Length: 120
Image (cartoon, rainbow, N blue to C red; front, side, top):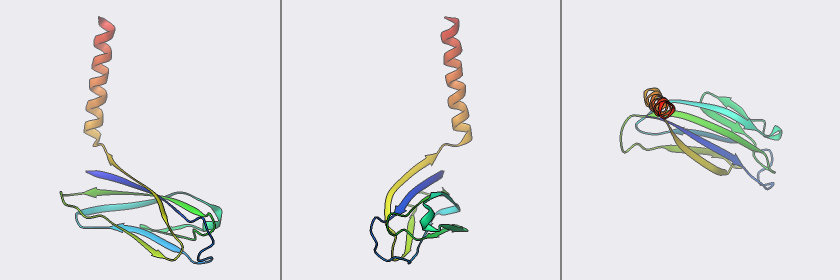
């Protein structure tokens, strides 16, 4: 299936001022990785290059990153890479993206229930 991993990265103190951190993911059984830089503080100077997000996260600066990827098999290993001296991963959220057919069937079923209730 397809999954999304959202990460909020940042640091609240002045450790490593001027240094940058890079974040990326990889792993066995994972394919079609894409990344988006959803939001970031002005001071971070965040950039997105392919699937690597780089920025400075000292003194309260932060970045919000979302990765989307496909998982092909059970026993998949997901690696989150953080390189550099100033970044902390503050929050992680992993969610499964429903297949379009599953979502459509769910809506069709809901519609049928509403129509049945309306006729009764």
